[in-house]
Image (cartoon, rainbow, N blue to C red):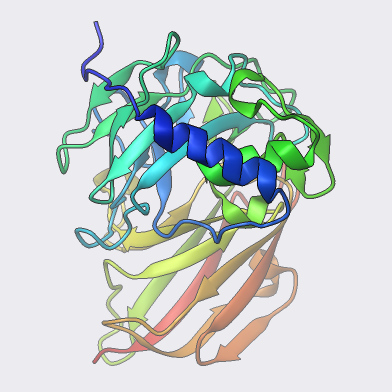
Amino acid sequence: MRAFTASRRFVSLLFGSLLAAAASPGVWAHAPSGAIFTTVFDGTEVNFNIYAAKEDVYLDGGPGPGAPQGAAGLDDDQYVFQVTDPSGKKLLSSDPARCRQFLVSGGIITMVVDTDCEHPTGPDVDHGAATVQLFPYDDTPNPGGVYKAWVVRLDDFLAGCAALGEGDGLNAVDCGLSAGNFHGFIPRHTKTDNFKVGRTNNLEIDTRFFDGATGRTLPGLAVTWTDTLGGSNKKHSYNKPSWNTSDNLAHVEAVESGVHEISIENQPGCLVSSVLCDADSCGKTTNLTGPGSVDVPIKHNDRMWTHYIYVYCVVQ
């Protein structure tokens, strides 16, 4: 039995979306704000990222770990998700896209869209939200056991499929692949997050925000992580007891090989004075005055499992 009961979406909304996509396949919306992350059934493990089985992985959206309430919610809308390998070339989701839809209201996932094949949901312990099971999806060909979860607005997905020549994207399993269009998902209009299944080494990027006056690390501050394909997600600094450190970290786990970008902006609680990344973590010593972006190259079987970025703040 599903933990949440899905309700049917108005046919007129869906029909209007289809018409808009068919009429304007080259017009794209902006990426949704906020963030997504993977979790377990009840949301008790946020950014868990390494799972024993594929069935254990659930999608969550809205305020993630370390995010202030309401600060990282997806825009209210109807969304489609997919699971691929890290390169995005291999679609691993094995059911039609109509089965992979959910609704966001008030910045949180509230329910899946009622079809003949919607995914099971779980009761998130926070915010009265729902989690959505990503399974079914095939095994990743990635040797490190890495998977990539994607989320995009329904209208953007339908337009992306139309651009690939698929006029019935919701009833297709795979709309196709072209440069910059991964099965109907345009990276710059998506939110992505990586996760691993099985016992594997974990490559990660950790950003610490320091109070320049006291040296303590600060919670609740955000970086924007842009992956190797151009998909983005926000990560907020927080502390997890199992890390065995008192530091707060903006934590990006299960990163794939290639160049990732970490962007730091001025934000409430942090006027950025400098951003530092040494050659071991960034390939070359990077020292920015004020806010900016840092490129972090990741290699498969990288000896340095964790890459570090240090941000120094004037606390206002």
